[in-house]
Image: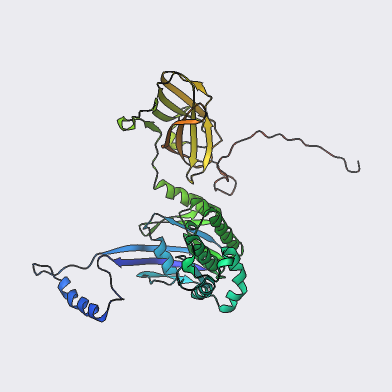
Amino acid sequence: MPPILRVQQLGKRYPIGRPARPDASLREQIGDLWRVPRRLWRRDGSLKGPSPTIWALRDVSFDVEPGEIVGIIGKNGAGKSTLLKILSRITAPTTGGADIYGRVGSLLEVGTGFHADLSGRENLYLNGSILGMRRREIDRKFEEIVEFAEIGPFIDTPVKHYSSGMYLRLAFAIAAHLEPEILIVDEVLAVGDFGFQKKCLGKMSDVAQQGRTILFVSHNLVALRSLCHRGILLDQGEVTAAGSIDSVVQTYVQQFSTTRLEWVATGEDAITSPVQLLAVRLLTSPPVDPRRLTVADPFAIEVVYQSDLTDGLLQVSLVLENLEGVCVFNARSQPQRFASGQVRQRCQIPANLLNDDSYTLRVILIQDTNLGLLDRSNLLHFDIHDTERQGAWYGKWIGAVRPQFEWMEEVTSSVRGE
């Protein structure tokens, strides 16, 4: 089956400097024409070189098969939005091109085309038409769109009186009910409250199950992993990674994090609290390279602190989070009587517990089980690797942890006719 989208050596170049002014008056345009020749010469009479430019995209190529859900990831300014605007025919490429075989629906800027003085009903028809829906299609889906947006009592109220959440809910509801072969979505899950974001993700999943192709740009790694089959990583306008969504997300996260297996307090960390954190370390036993930890390697977290208290109970809490910000576990030590002096505690992490992922460690010192004396985040950064191969599938195991529990099996034989 041929691809539904083929991008070949796509490039987009923008000039740096004074932008064009298409909305300028005739007088201003004539003045600009007079200034252009003067801007070509330096004060010493020499001719200036060409204006500087920047490549927002350079030599981008990939194919998308029908029914695929592809997540496009990258830092701010990597070229993600520029790519989607070219695919949506909003702007033209400088080099290369994209062949699209099917109707395209784009949701790049939520609410584009809304008029503040028109009611929600009128904007529904106006915005739906802009997005390519016919009037009969809007009529058929009107009640469904209003119900999804949860603005039924206010549908005939001018949108200038809407809250920002109501405005965004209506805009997404309209775009989400398009029926294109290819849906292009840019950061829509960044709007609305948690409940509505969950509802949006569910709608995206429904569209995907109908066999439509989706290009999805988001910084929400949880949403990308749960929704997408494949990922493409852009960096400075170029494709730097492509493949399974898990491998691409892992590469993306590694751009931001550096391995730190030991934290030691400095003079800047000195505090007036009666308990001071001195050091946090990741230790391995038997000795292995901590930068190459696998799911089968046990290790320990060591916490060293100085206590000046002589009465009460103290607990150490280790909060481990994965790259998606999900708390994998919160391990607390047994309450200990305060002992004045330096205290060293170790928490042993068994093998075959953590999944293949990147992790950060937060340390909390708790007094008498309810009073937080100290709370420090991002003290350690480390990766756990999975070297096992699961048959023909080499993807990541599902879940934040992957413990090996004890299984018991009992086989009961039966005789036919008994």
